[in-house]
Amino acid sequence: MSKIRNFCIIAHIDHGKSTLADRLLDETGAITDRDKQDQLLDDMDLERERGITIKSHAIQMKYNHEGEDYILNLIDTPGHVDFSYEVSRSIAACEGALLIVDAAQSVQAQTISNLYLALENDLEIIPVLNKIDLPSAKPEEVSDDIIDLLGCKEKDIIKASAKTGVGVSEILKAIVEIIPPPKETTDNNLRALIFDSVYNPFRGIEIYFRVFSGKISKGQEIKFCATGKKYFADEVGTLNLKQQPKQKIECGDVGYLITGIKNAKEVKVGDTIVDGSFNGTDVISGFEEVKPMVFAGIYPVDSDDYEDLRSSMEKLQLNDASLVFTPESSSALGFGFRCGFLGMLHLEIIQERLDREFDMAVITTVPNVSYHAYTKKQSGEKIIVNTPSDLPEPSFLDRVEEPYIKASIITKSDFVGPVMNLCIEKRGEITNQTYLTTERVELSFDMPLAEIVFDFYDRLKSISKGYASFDYSPLGFKKSKLIRLDLLLNGNAVDALSALIHFDNAYRMGKKICEKLKELIPRQQFDIPVQAAIGSKIIARETIKAVRKDVTAKCYGGDITRKRKLLENQKKGKKKMRQIGNVEIPQQAFMAVLKLND
Image (cartoon, rainbow, N blue to C red):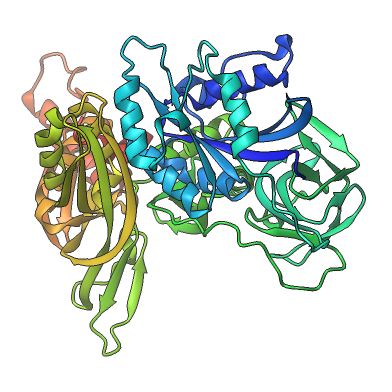
């Protein structure tokens, strides 16, 4: 055990984690020249296209230091705030972390939040200053920022360039010397933490785990504490570039397990694996339950695909434990799922993965957050409102509380004005303003979560020319003046387009949505009124004009009454059509609400 080191790489998005992981694999000879490629651990097409890490990836390396052979288990983690749950899972399986800071961009919001996660878990931190080869790099200035953040000494910071390979050997040396080996245990009972799992269509579910005590052997009977079910370990092994089967995985090591489980519900990330004969309740405290921040409905385009969509979501949940979903139905869209996501990028990625990996065409409804509504009954009954249709009638409603967050924005001092304006427009209240350096400012706001769900992050990036970084943590619920905005098409309410909105923004939002839908919904043979309503009061209206068919085209001359008769018949037909006509709503209309500020 003294020769094992488990560590992860944490940093803000685009600070060079995946590239550094490639260099570490090169340096330790974990990959052959034939397998070499950029961002080797990012094995999803989507990750390569967008240049971001979505999944944490584990890999084992062998390293010789001063004549001794060491085993290094590396877990590369995502940097985007929407995938922070992946980071918390990786941290739970490690003893140390490489904290990477870009020498040009300096410390960002997500760097600080990931660092706190690591410190809470008592991880040993190795600070690495990356991208020192860039012309815009400011190594001295950024080193001072790291010293302020960590309280370390200048000589503790390793200056490196993942692109050119400078400083990689010093990082490996520091991993062996600074990160402690796994703790020795006197307990020989098997206890292993599941930190990830993937679905393999041929072999069932592959479980990735870290052994905290005892050992796990091939053919051994094991039990999952959360479900109490027992299985046999058909295959265990270590996670090299390709899986390497072994006879047993010892205490302190990281590996994979295949038991032939086909049902996704039987595996829970964060669960403890114990020996089949073990009857105790001594489980490993994993990581906290995920808290979804954004809710949206996902429905199959063809209602016959409902069961296929369910099995696709379950397989995706194995691979991404932060996805939460429950069945729901809508009068407009049929049966589907109410899904909880960690943010808008997470929603986008899940939608894309359903399409690419499972060939599922889906409709996504307007994202919203979860509110608490209190009724006028004596007990003040609390109702959790996930969809606008859950909100009680105004006559029964006492008050509505919405979730608030503490937002931390780090930006250049030139952009403080525009950033403040944006936050105040989104109903934010400034609580703190700290100058980290003369150039960099940290702004703290208390804001409603609903306001940052749509386009907040994108707008923040554009007004700060990409320099602002954003992180948030939940604050709790506060009373708010919220109403339900309904959308009527041809007099019928479309529940999938309803939204819960603050009273002050209702008229502006209603007008904008009506204008947007007027552009997106195709014209029919009859006029279609598009209305926004609060209860029975219409607050905005647009009309999609009818496509006029020239019924008199075949009349050459002749008596005017012939033409009038044809037009009268057409008018009657259109009136009847308007009464029974259905309006097809295209997919982009459901997502239009998100892009109202474009």
